[in-house]
Image (tube, rainbow, N blue to C red):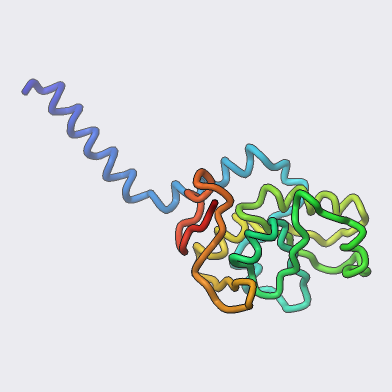
Length: 173
């Protein structure tokens, strides 16, 4: 084997070792790029850690569809949906426009859209959960099914989106 080929193989091996070492950081950067592709960041993000450590007087809104919410949701979240989101129903359950609101979906794209609608309606203390319920579960936080029983299942919307969930049982149809 000539020296050029040996050098090429050695560089390839080193590349895969480095890639393996930085795999967890790589997935986070990739999620950031995905969110940058779809979001305008008109709504500030709140991290999973910040949400977990926040006070209990915030309102958590789940902007996923019924099937996703029934499979699992963050405890205390109110499902507001996405496709049939009704702003009028929100204003009745959230009369105080200064309330701290965190909106989430699977990864944070649909939730930004819903949060923007709330912002236009005059709500001014709104956050988008960075990485959504996938990031929540992937960081070992609890989720609950429609019977409010802890579950490991997460509805990942589709097989393509399921790659963003790193922990938990992936459910899609």
